Length: 312
Image (cartoon, rainbow, N blue to C red):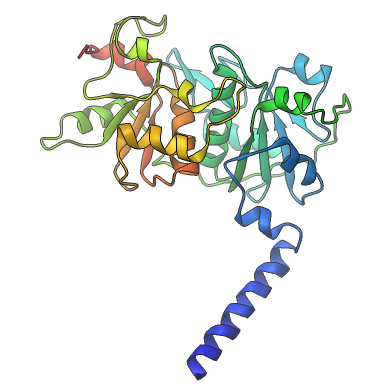
């Protein structure tokens, strides 16, 4: 009986401490932040402490109209706060110092609740992948609470939510995160996994199926086919036609059909230049609970410089 009482009071103390540290109105959001949020969720949480609505559309799109309170830092290729070009490779990670400076300039802290907003449905769905690339980069940099507006700005407008042209003030900070060095791997790491005698990591190709099969050759990787041992899991399957994410069960079925149900098996995702791979990394780790997923950021663009693709 005494042991039960001690456990009870210890749990009560911890719960009270969390309540005090996080605040009654925000504790639920911190510990139960979903992978994507609806327009209604975002509207209801507009006064949430530490909320940052991060609009990554172009400056022109943002100036035409945006979600009240949203700040703008466009996702632009080849250079922006979110990606750089290195050794002529697109969508590479910025240097750590540059990334930290950019995040701090936006007023984002490690404790911020960041909602990434992109335009929405498009064909091909590159804007949707832009959102996951930004979300992944923030997570890589040590921002702990990141989510994506389901359906993007287009869904916000379609749902009749308020828009504005007013630009909010930003209070910059000295952001000093802690990057996740295990999240991205090099071409040499991929080669070692492929050549392991008894099989290494599961290699996932997130490009369109026709690209994987060699029926289409993309301009940034001029050899048809895919990296040896890679399995096809096209990123566009993640989204519905309106740019919203498929259900948890649908995403789970798609993933397990290709990579299996072992949540601890090492998985390496790649694509053409680094966009689509970020989408499956985000879904696998943040939505489905896979714990050992990495991105090969050099992607097909780098691979074809040194090795052949295969058709099988």
